[in-house]
Image (cartoon, rainbow, N blue to C red):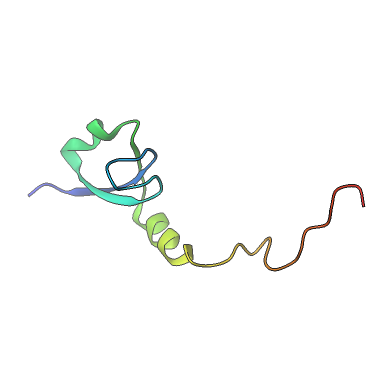
Length: 68
């Protein structure tokens, strides 16, 4: 059995949308060039954890209008 590599989609593929993590056989990674980029497991795990969290830099603070 070949090893699997986690890749993040950069282009829609069927029903899958950009940003989704997919498992790709290591010997087929070259076929995904331009459609996905390799991610390490730590980044994939962090992305899954923070996907539902609010952006800490914006929060619930309303933005002020420019020039006021």
